[in-house]
Image 1 (cartoon, helix red, strand yellow):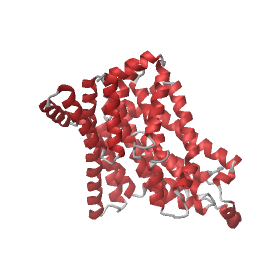
Image 2 (cartoon, one colour):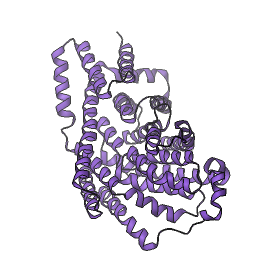
Image 3 (cartoon, helix red, strand yellow):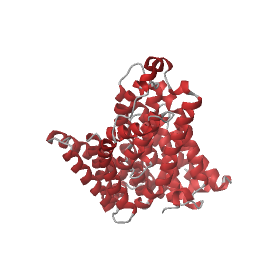
Image 4 (tube, helix red, strand yellow):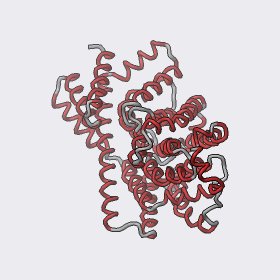
Length: 442
């Protein structure tokens, strides 16, 4: 069988197994094991490679960032910091066109700078922001779409678990990836804000529920709910954590692992001071941290095993030769890659896409002269769009299940999130065209 035939068989088998319901880690391990066994006709070698991947895959000190950032995010979630952040943003932005939508994006951006988990942001702000927006005359579908759309900031604004996974797979500095994600994250948040304000001014029927606004009348012109002292008190915990984690990371005082440790400790202290951490809750947080972390680490081991099989089979080289022979050029390859990632986002979750595509695409990107830091930010934005596109759209289903309102259908939430997908595509094109937006601070 030719290298290209083997490539098609390997990738096709992997996608088929995942679509049939097999866990992505098991599918990666199975394809990698059988692939090495078939290529070298050596069962013992396949076992040895699996052992080496399991041992060497997560033995590095940098992998401690994963459980530490997960722990920090969970501690932040139970401390109601997300609600406090939204309350402050709501007070400051109530008189802005589409102010509560803007407040949701602003609060989600700050929350993302601490948790780094999109699904956590979606769950928290569905409970906090959607009822408040509906109460003030916003369409529930738009409110839910705003929460789902802005939740993707959690995987771009550092710290980000997806950036950690990409950094491990591409063997790039996680600290540099965090720094590179800062400007694109801000651009994306600003794009969301501008889009909400423009829709509120020029397409109010998409944003507001006209009947509800008539019911409210002048009652919706409510004075700010919080005083300056109250806003300062509610802002202090999140500001402290942001300064502790990102300030220490960007100043070079902390490594990413140390920043995760300090952030987790800071979140633990805040949870204790707020008396939101009972022994039962602490045990639940530890169990969930372990479950999430182990799932990610097993995936990384499987992905390393899979990438070694691909290298042994010559798959990256075969695809690279095919793309070069096709005469697509660097940006032709990039456009094709982004299209494939977007299509995969309709059927697979974000981590799975990274695990499947990064080992194949990263060597080709290097051949075309792309900086892997810049390429990583493009990859994460493209992958994040998959969180918002049907039929998978994991952020959409997270919002739907958390909202638990039969009057708001999944289809209506997908409709509400479409403008955010448009903004993300524009930002993706902008980042691809101007690498300095990702590399200026690195």
